[in-house]
Length: 210
Image 1 (cartoon, rainbow, N blue to C red):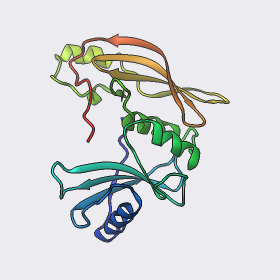
Image 2: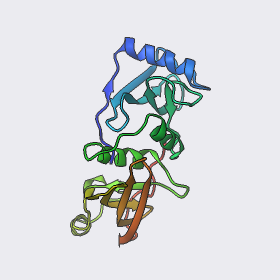
Image 3: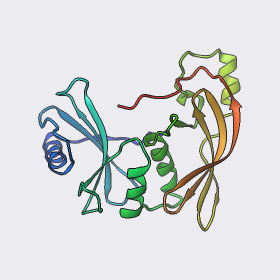
């Protein structure tokens, strides 16, 4: 899962970012007094920050994620890219920032990608341990132990001239499966060699996007 730490911006810096977002991102009108912004740097996008933006003046709360980057990137929004739960804005960023992938950054990119991209039929949830499964109902201890023994954390298996090959464990709908994740130098991701480990597990089959 994508578990990198965010830092809350101080009021002055938050106000500055809100004003920038409102002026540069189409159809955004964030409340300058009731919007909170959290930020974190991204190792695979040099000079970029991931912003977690929540406008509490609205009900329900407007909650969006953006990438802030220095200079123009060919998008309509000069300094910001809105993450829309598809791979489209991420792939555009990969070529425009551009993306920097190496053995120190690629794991974070994989976690970021699976956290912010939802497929047509649902989300692939990257799992490193039994505690990361979003249980709909808690399974018996014996079942937890059995499932836990099947989970292999995200592990680099090979670096190639084209990119990186990882072994991983994913959840899709109600199935737990192992697979290989091929990450290419340009940031494209491919899932191969899927093997179902457990079916009909009592897990939430998708986590609602804000």
